[in-house]
Image (cartoon, helix red, strand yellow):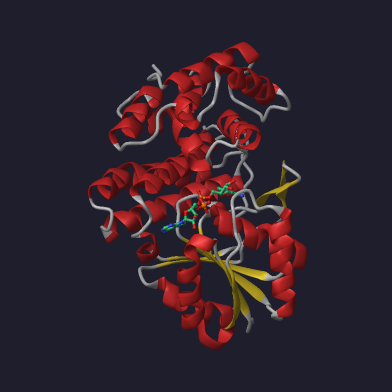
Length: 352
Ligand code: NAD
């Protein structure tokens, strides 16, 4: 029997095509804008400048100060540049960090956002902004934060280093996995989650073998869009809580932390959400935790928290924080069970 649900489609416009970056100018005009501030990290500045040249007179400048965790002082500097250059929209070229900066600007100014993603993080299709001030991370959910236009061009991901492709892909998969058992899931989010998982499960091994294979890159980006949309639609649970705790309090790297934790958190939840996870388990050979861990190992993903320089004392504190103000989770949690799950992830053990 179909379980009761409530569903609202995302208002965002999604464009997906190889070479779609050439449509950025067209979409700026279609949105009624004339002055775009192009955003990037310092590492992608040259790409942002090239995109600004392509956009021509519709570009009013480049701000390349985007960085991890969306610090408020960087946002304030970017808002100032947007005002000085009379920008009426931002074009965020990059991964979750650059998208985060665009969202933070839009949240403060209501400028229109066009995002051109170059990783699989999925932030471009969510109304969620995580930002930091004085070392504290806060998360805001607001309709103003959801980017209006997303232009996916697989060609822009050809150079995403293999290691980052793997961890970013597993980060995307985490959104879909938790979407499968989300309390507020709906039939569309479930379809998207499974299709996204399938796309990434087949494309990531192909990317490892041939990083510049456009077909595999296209498949992975398609999967990332689906998984990101699930993240933007339904609530996340224990896995995201633990990753936010580790990233927020111990500064572990974002995508890598998701990659290490996912087999452990889904294995933990499998006993309480067996039916919901069954189609995902099938994708990974029958056992969700062990199968996913085998998959991650085969593609060369990081497997243990030890690799991030955490100590066992950190795990005690992480377990305490993770059970404080917990997100809803299909399986009840307590400090002892989370501490033991973290120990398994720390050691890099294969979950059963
Ligand atoms: P990132 O944006 O921090 O990128 C990491 C590095 O890779 C940067 O230096 C970037 O310039 C570079 N890079 C990006 N694409 C590249 C490419 N194609 N080729 C070469 N280099 C490239 O990493 P990320 O994993 O995409 O994003 C992580 C951040 O996004 C975290 O802060 C996380 O909290 C946030 N996030 C937010 C949401 C949300 O819904 N709010 C969702 C997912 C992630």
